[in-house]
Image (cartoon, rainbow, N blue to C red; front, side, top):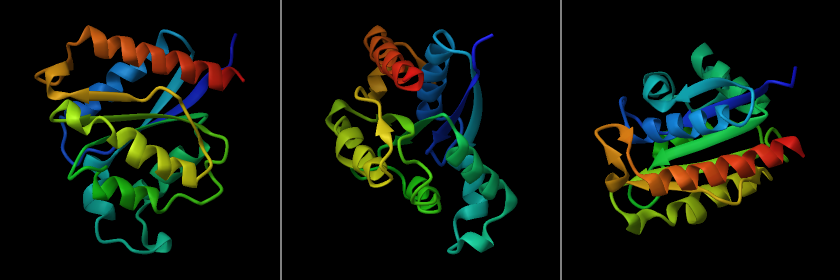
Amino acid sequence: MSHVHAVTAIVGSPSNPSKTKALVEAIVRSLQATLPIEVRWVEIADLAPHIGAVTSFKALPEAASQALRDIESADLLIAASPVYKGSYTGLFKHLIDFVAPEALVGKPVLLAASGGSDRHALVVDQQLRPLFSFFRAQTVPSAVYASEADFEAHTVRSDALLTRIHEATTQAARLLAA
């Protein structure tokens, strides 16, 4: 039996349901078709009431501490956020600020974002990629960006997006294999 990879999916949306979560679910399905994985979900919508006002690591409630353990111990991270004001959400960044600086060194990270239009597509490379570069993580070369047009309600309906997801998850699988 092959090794089951621990994947932690960070959904940076403060609301649920969300297009960002739908995007991450599509990424997870694509990964599951390629690799044996166990997925742990870290959802800002669930954590927001617990972490919003917390300013020290010692004051984090157990749910947030568990989320950080899941992030730091993952074989692969999926990091996704909706685009707010040209960047990832503030609560997504607030959670990532609690990650230990050495915890993600060399860890593969698949980056994803969702936004209202294609004009926000560069958020992945101009905001998310530098954030994970700080941690010296190994970001997957192909990131995934989805706009409103890629969804019907909260379901991915775009073949072009599914192709981009497949490309990114194939690259992620190669990074895990290496």
